[in-house]
Image (cartoon, rainbow, N blue to C red; front, side, top):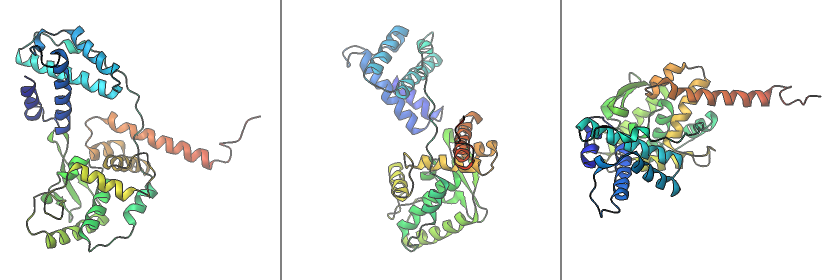
Length: 298
């Protein structure tokens, strides 16, 4: 039953691989709990709200954070919605499960001057790995794309002459992202060296020297290494560069709706969090620059 639901998520809902895997772990953990480790039959149609609450309470008492608890509640809700759709249950008992409220921390970002220092630093352009890794950082920051969009980026989807590329985002939604002449030149240098060194290759744009595509952990390691020692953010990851892209766009006058489209956000409210970052920067600049900002009264 759980396997059928996961197939439904992948094929019908077009859920991301990460979401499917997270729900799979949650639901298998829940099934193990309600069957006492497999000693009884798994029959979700016989369970009610008190049974679901018992598991969620046990998860919370085991020390799970609010984000984890929320996701497990959402896993149950989605699973029972599927059972309701299939006619296996008459109602969704998970609807009345309470979601813990989450504080909304501001996204971590790298300061513009630090990002520029990383991208503008010298490197050996004849070294394939160095050129590729520098281009990865530049592209993530210049386009705001997600790590999954970068690893899945196809060579044919990158048009350096037109200065645009096409990515496949969440729920298989395509969007076109423009980029500037500097990135276009770097793309051409990378393409020429890649085509010279790698005879047989996959259709992806970014490749390992073996001709195989990149994977998530490798991109994370590349970004962490490239930013390390220069950037001083709390975290150094591909997603931090996405945050940096959005923050710098807004700080330099971009319209909020334009940034929303570039990031591929379905809702404008998701993009609005970056205006809080911009305002925080504005406050800090005011406090540092205005002659009377720190003057004490009396």
